[in-house]
Image: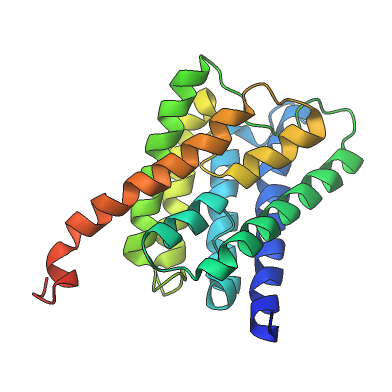
Length: 225
């Protein structure tokens, strides 16, 4: 592994740490502060931290911060196979580190911001598949290769995340990210429905590929817009 690969993986660790620390941290602090942040504030926190990280590290690692996104890029033929497992490991490590910090800071909190279905597991499974599918289509549309970068990439991706968290968060948690759900579940012991949040984002990201290819079919054939 060369220096450039190490920089990419370090960026994924840092970016995913920031995402989980800010996003699930907002949930924890909202719970213990008499809902001072509010649900809207939590949704915006998730969207804004992703926006910020895209502009900060997008040119280094692509700012995936999400194993499902990395697998989506792989399925779309935009990701080097040799980097997939290191990326997923780095994202998971960053997420777990963030949850450890929150566990130390707020040991009395029972969930640490874990994603828990409000209804049935299957209801949240379907929601998470659709949410991740929409997110991945947007990411593919605004990214270059396997990198989310450019003037409007951060705004587009961050806005979709905030929007989906705002309307679907009260039901499924709007995770769309296996690492985001894995870390607080492991640290809090809420593992019963974890499978939903590990499986659904991967399915959703995979479903996004044929949709994106159909939408951009003419451009891919060189026929113009």
